[in-house]
Image (tube, rainbow over all chains, first blue to last red; front, side):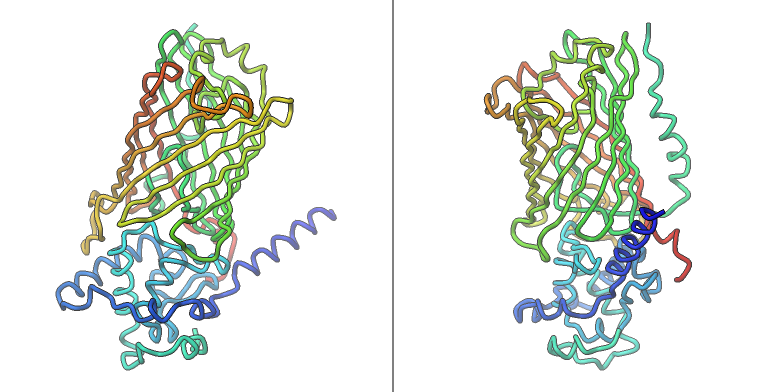
Length: 149
Length: 292
């Protein structure tokens, strides 16, 4: 009985640790150089259009299982349609895909080819264009950290 | 007497039947022996079957099967259980043991070289023919002994690996350094290695839905073998293998890896034919949650 209780408490603690949502602290770790990186797939309208389509395919295959098909997050995991994402620069999002936030549950995605990661950034950007089209893409990390999910 | 069908097949067949009904995904470097820094995604459960066939000179042909259950506990910790068995022609089919492994990513971000620490406990008899790694002075001539004798010798070992992985211009380079100690006897420390290089066949994704696009294929090569023991460290008296691998990660989370591994010296089998099929249950732990 005691063992079961201990196991239950351990599992609850582990779950709580895993479900601690993204608090934006990862933004503090991005260097100015990474923050300023420019998405190479947005220079041409057709290339950008294709990148959004390709990013959607990658998103559905790799990201939707946690962040939801609609981008609003599943089971307490962060939404990708959010003020924080819309304020983050393309460089910030690319950094997030390269490094993840392993301590908060987000794995790095370096195994995806670089172009695929940029396609994903383009898709995430397109998801966030409607509600916050006027957002400042050059916002500082401290501003982004304060942004709500 | 001819060997009966491997009992483990009966465990795997039902899983094969439900493969097409559930969505899945995941892209890992196409390695059969080498580990990369890619861990299982948190909450996902991957069920895989790794099949190996070989017909070594002067020994009976054999088929070995390993069933793997890999679970992503967190984004920095993956835990896995292996169940192993084998069928040897003109001998018998037997369960050879289990392994329990854990992999940890100690660093919080991606660097030029990304380390992963691997710790495993294995309870495997000497009849094991899975070739999941090679350590010590493993030679193919050991397989000439009958299963009835080999299965009596059970090795209970702790094994550690240092996994290093890098990404350069779309290529993944992974190196594993292996050390193993049989904790049930006073055998010396045994060592082994494995290295792999691989690359996806496409740089970017296709904007249109497709199943057999290049983006789902990866190709690579592996080299692995034993490094002797504490007292006999080196490449002599060990088996060494190298070979190409190809993987197909279908958009529905089915991954198939295939690759022949060619023996590089007289202590090795001529060829190890390997086929691995994996299915990933997305967010397995969500099955136990009610909320969205």
